[in-house]
Figure (spheres, rainbow, N blue to C red):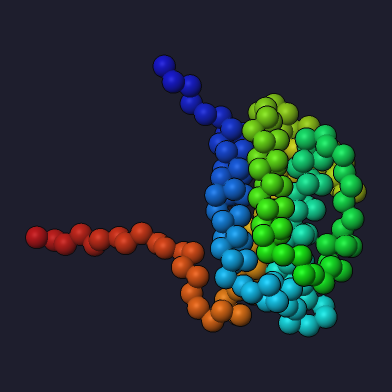
Length: 173
């Protein structure tokens, strides 16, 4: 008899799926549609460019998952993620983000159900492993939305990321 997956296992599988199969491809598609100049465009001095957001996502995912949960050395310099003015080439940004997500998913793959309640100190916060994973997925989605907004603003078109299924109404015959 096949064993039913645990809630923790489903959560971790969903986290990996959202990072690698949903949000990452949207960011990559956006970066591919923006010119090198548009990737580093800022609407004002207080806002971040898509390029800065990608650097920030790499730093956040590395610090919270790869280092915080996976044990890799934490060498993040958060302020540099926002002060960079580019141009770091699109291909470099995409490769860096893809590598970061792959490494994070490998860490998530190794997490066991009982360990999700373990507590960690990450970026000055005391969090459970579950809380750290939840934070990263939520944070990634938030910033993916910003990159999508920048892309829509610069391209002026529907990116066709949301395709709801067509529901056929039943007719009474």
